[in-house]
Amino acid sequence: MRTIVFVAPFLLETTMRFARAAAALPGVRLCGVMQEAPGGTDRQVFADLVRVDDGLSAPELIEAVELLRRRHGPPARIIGVLEPLQVQLAEARAHFGVRGTEVETAEVFRDKAKMKDRLRAAGLPVARHRLVGTAQDAVAFEAEVGFPMVLKPPAGMGAKATFRVGSREELLRAVAGLRASPSNPVLAEEFLHGQEGSCDTLTLAGVPRLTSISYYRPSCLTALENPWIQWCTVLPRRDQGPGYDDIRELGARAVRALGLDAGFTHMEWFRRPDGSLAIGEIAQRPPGAHLTRMIGLAFDMDPYRMWARAVIDDAFDGPWDRAYSVGCAYLRGIGRGRITSVTGVKQAHDAVGRAVVETKLPTPGAPKSDSYEGDGYAIVRDPRTELVEHALETIIAKLRVRYA
Image 1 (cartoon, rainbow, N blue to C red):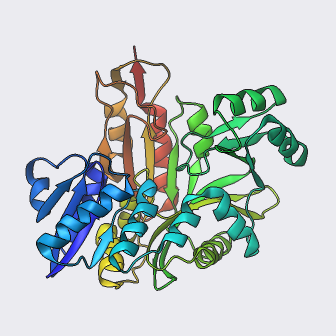
Image 2 (cartoon, helix red, strand yellow; image 1 turned 180 degrees about the horizontal axis):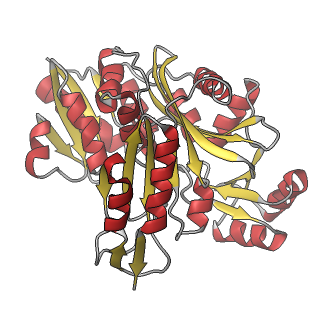
């Protein structure tokens, strides 16, 4: 029996899908380290649990794993899916001599400035960037790239805590508001124009074994800046050939350059108006915004088990054919406060309900989410990409979320 330690400060439903997949593998005794114990049937997924006060603390994580080691023997793997946890997981693996992503690799993925330096050194196209600790640093970078530009934390996640600035006044105000200093710099980046999407890979032995390409309508940053927009993600059925092969190659080269051995990666790509590609950033984690679930629907397989097999068994059960196009509409609306109503549900269902495979409607009375993923979602699937795009357009045109 192999002792597998699964670390998750808080067990959200998406996280539990990965935990259940790990626990279901033959010969696995799944032990958890978390801040809050799961309730109901989720508790049965774990053979043992250790609670910590701070789920992102490496010393507390190591102490918890040591307790599990005394109870069940040396762990075979120490795993987790949360992006801000990957460096601490690597430190725990190094402490106990457990196989998996090493500290240096995890740090390069986590520190976006180091990550971009590594990618650029490998000859890969990335946004020009600079760590900004003073107003003078910011003005110097402005002279290099102009406006607009983007400011974000060096260890940010996705589009969260990301700001677009379009003038000297906005730039200096943002640098001050983010409390940038030489010891606590922010990352300034060239703003990339063009189509945006993701290239998500499942890597084993340093080689991407499954690659999934998607595109956004509109971009994540646009959705973040305009909290009323009901935006969409589309996984086209055919993501190989012209317009996709160069993205696939770029993703594989990025994984090699950063040295990942096994696991999921989520890479944001931009295609500029001249057709050239650039990498926004790449994260060492499963894709969010329901993309992992969508990948499973596109290939008609279990993506959570695929991840577990890679990071626990060093195995890959594919390849699978990409039999479907899949899309997701993120539901939200104009206003602030609490959700008062969701209208147009019947009309949308009557029009495209046959293509809908999973929904979570916004809950009346709930406060408006500050996430760009919105207050609910609808996932659609069909072999025809054009039908998926039409279904998404219909959903966001007919559904209206209101707040008060």
